[in-house]
Structure formats: structure tokens, C-alpha cells
Length: 303
Image: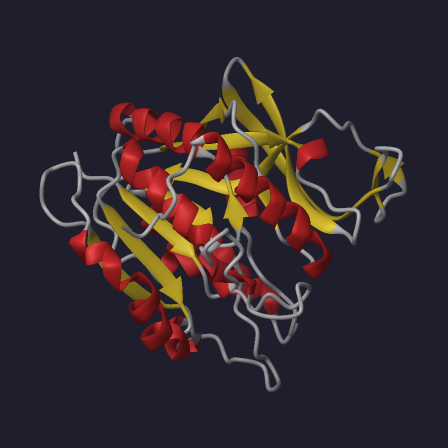
């Protein structure tokens, strides 16, 4: 069974202060998404779909041209496709508000890949490191998921995903008997030096060991009709709000509550890390150097 890795790389990276998706953070200038691709290929994925802005295409083909020489699990070459997240995919009934420049969120991003994804897929952020175990578990889950109404998610502990350098948004998960029961999107989480985590929106302290979504989702192709209707409903509510966006955790929670979706919650033994803010960069670079030194990754991911 072919499995696709879908990488959401069209985000603006505004809090980071630049295009963190193409920041060479590894010991030899590796991008974070190169670790994701390397781990996914060795876990059994054979196709990579990049969701990008149109102006990124030439740069991405230059950066990832080496993938065409990699061997997929079926013995053929790794398949690579590029799709664009832009306003051309917005339904005709909705008028883009004047002054709107930012994308409409991760539901819109994944919808833009609908024509390219014809197999079970793992959907990730370009600027996060998830670890090999997450891809191994997701590959196993995707191979046994029923086609309709089922999905999977790898969760991480909140305390390991926040930043001392500013607030983050996380989907806080509630689970029951190995399945996701609900996801509460929480947008202003602050980590303090003493380890305290607080929702600045409500002023409440948060459980450091709460499981959160880091956008590591496993979907079957049957998710796309659900996404399409969900996004249309969202646009009907969005009006002329320049900041409105529809996020995958919000979509998943909505369809969990309606009973349209059943999501297996997987826990990874690996560690997540990422760069929400530029001040996070050095800690991530140190962690990657340690992983190369320990032998988890080879000298070069591109050879």
C-alpha cells in the first residue's frame, strides 16, 4: 500500500520573523522537513506532497530535487508532487476581503492537496520535528484504518511543545480508551521558567502532561469531502474577518462531536521540537547535532 507524506509548508512564519520552513537548521544546513521526509521514507512512505505558495516552487524543486533519486518502499522512485495554497482554490460564493493576504488555515491547506492525495496520508507541519517513532506508528495505523470515517493522530505532551519566548497555539486533547474524544484549540499558551503553563485567554493554569495535537494527522482519502463541506461552512461564518482561519484540530473536533469521525490517538516515544520563535533556533540546532552524533541520523540526509 502506498502512503503519502503531506507537508504543509505555505505558512508565512510571521512569529518566527522569516521563512522558517527553509531555514537550514541541521549540522549541514538540513531543513526540519528533511528530517520528516527521511523518517517517513524509512517508515514506509513512498510519496511526498508539498503544499507551498506558488512563488516557492523553483526554490523547493532545487532543494528537494535529490528525492527523485531515492528508492521508495515499492522499489520505484519516491514520488514528489507540489500543490499551491492560494486564493484560487477558494469557492466562488466567497469574496476575499480587501487586504487579506494570509492563508485560510490548515483545513484550506489540506484541501489544496485533494487532487494529489489518492492514498492514505500523514499530514504534518513543515517546521516541526516529530521523530522516527511517530512515522513508524502512523504508517502502521494507516495500513489498518478502515476507509471511511476513521483517522489517526500522534499526540505529544504539552510541556514539551511550548516556548519560553512567546505564546503558542495547541489543540489540547481529551481521550478515552485509545481514541480521541475531543480537541480544544487553545491559542495563547505561555510557558514560564518554573514550568508553569497558562492559557492567557482565560488565565487558567494548564496540565503540563496534557496531550496536544501538533498537526501529525493520519487520514484516508475519504476525508476530503468532509474537509470540503467543513471549509464551506467556515467561509459562510468568516465574513470579512481578515484573520479568520480554519484549523485541522477544530475541524476534527467538530466531526468527532457529530460522530462523522473516529480518531485513534497514538503516543510517540520520540520527542517533538520546533521553531515558533527565532529564539528557539539554537536549542533545536543543538538537539539535531546530538541526534546526528548519536547515530540516529547519518552524516548527510541527502546522499
